[in-house]
Length: 143
Image (tube, rainbow, N blue to C red; front, side):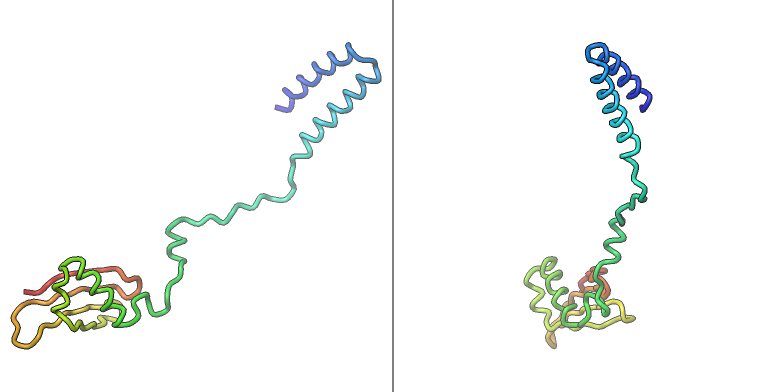
């Protein structure tokens, strides 16, 4: 690339010298060589280029905020989420299965269980929610 620039400039210089005086040709020649030197040495950067710290999407997600006790840290929060999910699946009938009870299994999964009034035959909804991230693991209804 530099050789190509040099050849183009030398042709330009020859044309300029023919049409100009000797002093004018020397001025043009000096300007062109200065331009070439600036192009060659001026573009060098002695400091290494530092790449931006790019992280993958999964790394960004995994390094995000995580509460010490998990996102679903209490039985109250687990029951509220369970009611929202169960209402979406079974409709407003889930309000007849209250109160809901939440049990923490192996300190990692909330199991929320509906209840029935005494002497009423039927099933209740169950739902399991992971404590650490709130993922719905299972939803089912008893008979």
